[in-house]
Length: 413
Image (tube, rainbow, N blue to C red):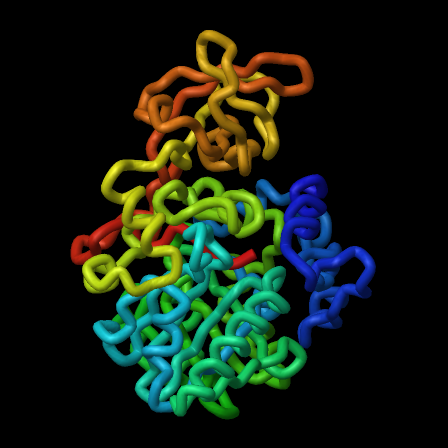
């Protein structure tokens, strides 16, 4: 697990440079006081786990009940102004014009020449006249530069765009995840969570204090609600949630987040997706909205649309190991003739399934379900089988009936 943390931190970008002192979120002291094992990740000190409870136990608790994750390190941005929709659409392939108020969508920033993924993001079109955008902490500096550069271009053309960056010392982001999420929150909020659909967003009051934003989404494959609120209220809200049902609601850290998202087949930026991978290669073609495909007006459209038509040369796949050691990121994937046909991007034991699982990229002719492959792990050969994602089809990891594809496949690093 520490190897994964070092790798993710090193690939996360300028904000995670090892030469910089890690930042502390507004909840740092809260985690330390509760036995959080603090480690550097994406430029911040964050809890890997709590007390003596291991990652696997925390993982299983999330699948069965409810866990609280601090994701305040993420970059939260408000995009305001009359041309806010046009502005953000100029950076990603989403159809934000068609997105109803108080609904969120997953999208990606794409490179204008290569079509590679510059970051993944969740954007909420609020009824208050602005877009709420959440992007990865490790891409904080790069994303700010991208947004500010495009803002300057829009303003130079006489268009109205304003960016408001919400710093993690001032704004917290909490993820309440697991099948007991609604049960944990329902007596603390002044809205009916039964009316909040997946990827729906609303303002609500948790106890006393100003309203905060609730969005029904998450990174675990289970039901979940992310709460964006002022830093001064964050610790109080966490305490209230923990007290709402002490046996069912617990704190969880980075270790469980990684194993949960892997089981759900979700991408981690810097590992499973980056500037060298396109949405088509990553299995995220459904993020390219129909109107945007027809208009071909998003960054990297020429490359991405060609891949949609002709197919990519490689694809992201799920891999299930029959036995042997875990297959970790960087391991080479071989065909039956011992030819290298790809590489692993994420991998490890599945606490839910009791087997080793992984994701990686392989040549397209090796990507069909059931294809037998193998990996080289410390001089040993591990047999693999290509399988469908997600590995654990539970909660919101399943496609919604009214969606064009999987509901979520990438978030948060």
